[in-house]
Amino acid sequence: MGSKTQISTWNPYTRTVTPREVNQTNHDMFCPGITFDEDGNLLITGGNSARQVTLYDTTTDEWQKKTPMNLDRGYQGATILSDGRIFVIGGSFGEVVSNKFGEVYDVHQNKWTELPGTDVSKMYTQDYDSWRKDNHGWIFGWKDETVFQAGPSKQMNWYGVQDNGSTTPAGVRNNMEYGDAMCGNAVMFDGGKILGFGGSLDYEKSPAIDDTYIISIDQPNTDASVIQPAGMKHKRTFHNSVVLPDGSVFVAGGQDWGFPFNETTFVSEPERFVYNAKEPAKSTWETWLPNTVARTYHSIALLLQGGTVFVGGGGLCGNCSANHFDGQIFTPPNHLNSDGSLRRRPVISSVEPIEAKPGDWIKVKTDSRIAENAASIIRYGSATHTVDTDQRRLSVPFKRRWFWHGFNTYDFQIPQEPGVATPGYYMLYVLDRYGTPSKSVNVRVAV
Image (cartoon, rainbow, N blue to C red; front, side):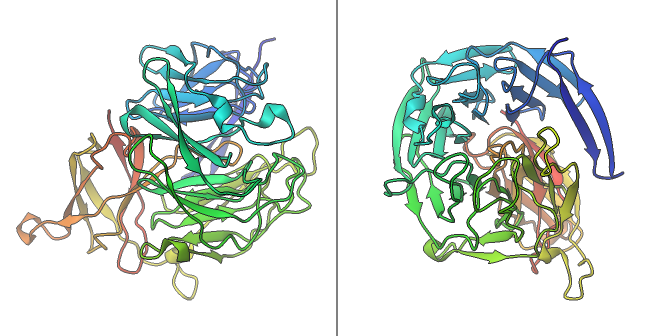
């Protein structure tokens, strides 16, 4: 019998879970790369079936077999480019170890192109397992069809996809002798601003760190700017993180000693990173309400349309005691009154158009006055092994129209650079003057 994958679909409105077996694509999707394409479909690359590629069409609810990759990969980094193609690099969990240079996938032509000039060795970590040195790259599609690699290696790089590809150093994240952050997190919490934090020197059986870095990028192939504020309250590896509508970053779970399928050193208390725009070095972490379930290796966290966070899973090896088949929803404090009841929330009444290109303007109506400089669009996330390179938050300041256009009518502009506003579906949020977010409305950024 061919390879297959067991999946489940959760409906957040009915709170129902529907199991399903995917066997028509001959793809065992254990430990793959996962990326949303420009049409909101999910592209799954490699894993146990190390060259196989499957696309889940979210409109038709169909699983489709696609052209295999040129190289076998598992644990690879994957991200969408400014032109809508998908870039992958690394992934020595596959059949062959090392030299997993990049390649790009054209979704419309169903074609892979190798990029031998994208030197994966430049992003190797010092992990004691050679097949882990290129795992889970912190990669972000950026301007001019480039990719910025922020970690987990302390060496940062730019990858280009023109011709045979290119590799350009982008500086080091820190000057420590051992500065890698395997299984740490990286989140683009605003355009060109990346938060990197946590992880450990080695993928497993290594103490976690609390190091925090604010990495700023602008023009491709130039050194990134790095500022190191105070570290997290807890040292963590195998944790998950989600950027929230207000631009803060929520972090859940993890361990202070990396040990897959074990949760003896579970960190129960989540944290929130708060960026200080005037003095970034003074940005802070604060702790929130502890979790009641251990979320470590193979757990996930995703932002929901209501502005809450889904946190779930973990473990899933044989009959491990660390297996968790459940999920929870975390409600941030800015949704609540002092007595714990839900606050009144602003409502987005209409959005026109719901699809736009970088630089286009969109008209929004709300039911009440909102904080005009607090709105944002957040790309849908797709986490795998603590890393989620799909999510990114972009500030979109609103301009209020004059009263004869109707009360509480605003305009905002999609960021003009295609690499900043990478193509795909985003959640549009507005916040009131108290910082309470609306429920989101989908906006698609087209190529």
